[in-house]
Length: 145
Image 1 (cartoon, rainbow, N blue to C red):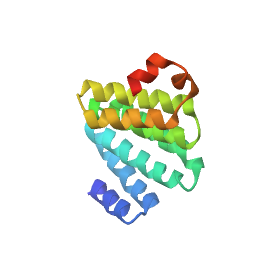
Image 2: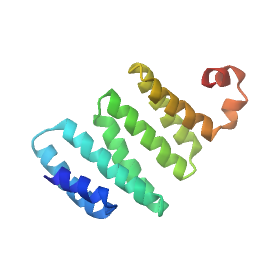
Image 3: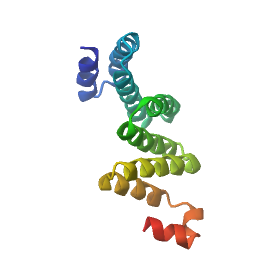
Image 4: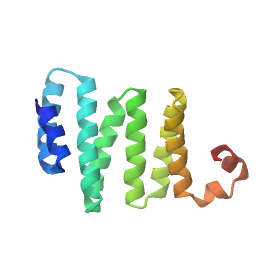
């Protein structure tokens, strides 16, 4: 019920209220040792902070905190998702080094899953950031192209 209430508040863009319900969901998951539910809760809270961080970048560190917790508990698919979100968060605060690191992790996980869409998403984000070190290394650039 807590999770569902969080989703409902997400659907009407009431992210602070959503987080309150996801936090309650998280506590229930922890109390019954539901690692999958706990990872889901971390993802949801991280996404809400990330969305609020689009208007107020001081909230991005909270998003990074929760996405990191998600990444630690998740299966390969969840690690891919958390890595994409972490890359986006670091990109939002203009930390290219960490952004690239997490998009590269996302690429690694998408290759493990044979997920071509995930690979395209990760590579597209790496290319969008376009760090000088990649563009100056022809061999690396060929790999990304």
